[in-house]
Amino acid sequence: MQIIAIAIRYLWSRPLAATLNLLLLALGLASITFVWLASTQMDRSFERDLAGIDAVVGAKGSAMQLILAGVFHIDVPTGNIPLAAVRELEKDPRVAKLIPISLGDTFQGFRIAGTTTAYVAHYGAQLAQGALWTQPMQAVIGAQVAQNTGLAVGNTFYGSHGLGGSGHVHGDFPYLVSGVLAPCGCVLDRLVLTATESVWRVHEKATALDAEDQKIMEEEREVTLALITYRSPLAAVSFPRFVNTTTEMQAAAPAVEITRLLRMVGVGTDVLRGFGAVLLLTAGLSVFIALWNAVRERRADLAMLRMLGAPPAKVAGLVLAEALLLAAMATVLGLFVGHLLAEVVGHWLQAERSLPLTGWIWLPVEWWLPALGAAVAVLAAALPAIEAYRLDVTTLLNTR
Image (cartoon, rainbow, N blue to C red; front, side):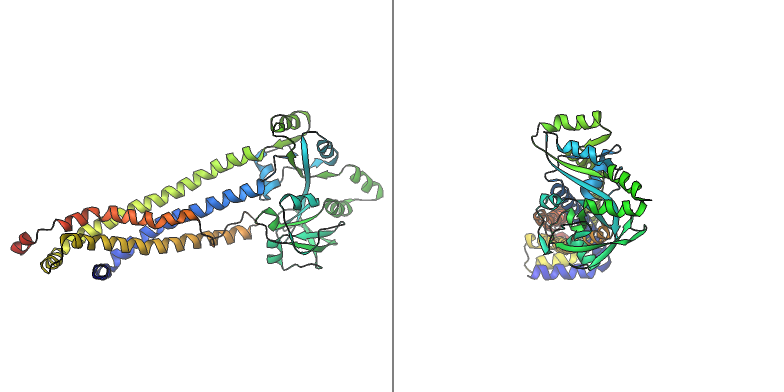
């Protein structure tokens, strides 16, 4: 306890240098903490939302865009595809389940997705209030939608045209909230779900010129995309090729595209992780220089401790304790800043109706952070501690 008390006083005697070293260490540890939190939650989100989806069929275009729009709802779709063609795919013996999704409108930035109740069942989502839709113009809202908009069962709302949230409001077609989903931690949390017929009704009635035009639209109905689950893993070899070569549609494999996406995102996380490592290296060098100079400046103090009976190991331990105290404070501060940054970014992503991210979780890997901070401190203090251990009291006193 005496060594710790003296180490605290030594740190307090150099507030500027101690604060600089503390900030460098804390920023390095915070960067690594944020990378762990963001990458882990992103991987979990991708894995959770992709579960059971073997292929996404949509209009020709970017396969990556099709996956991001159809599975994660964070991009615009590539276009629409004929309903008749989707129904033909549903009859394909390789297809075990097909979930149609129609997009085009939003409510306060949240996407309105026309689909079937199979979409809710696919993710195993449970109702917190009310019931699923049973007819057009009824809607079930996700947990995040309910929290941000204040909608509840029995309320009505109007959709806005387009996925940007600033389009024309369909004021003649109110939706009735029939149910609210319990939080599932999946993409459904930030969606407004309704029957596909609701989307058709809103857009057909709004654009049809007369009864004949309405009938033509009904015969040429489209959906935005379809989520496919294979009956057998062998279908992954033949089904996408069949769709891409024999139809006007496109089949994208989520596993392939997300692997490519994570490889691209991984470059950014590697850069941030490298930035954290550079900060830790810089902090380690700064601590080393500070402790080395401190040992040189405190020769008389250390010699006095030796004369008062302190063994060489305790004198060296004083230097080591100073570095470890700095590392402990930096670890606490780094964890706090890393989690705070994750929470701030999570709020920004939530405002953008994007992937969920929070700082209010603890990952098992974070238990390694104190060890990492301590390792940097020990390495930085090693040579100054050895110098203090080898201090020749007799020579120093004769010199003075």
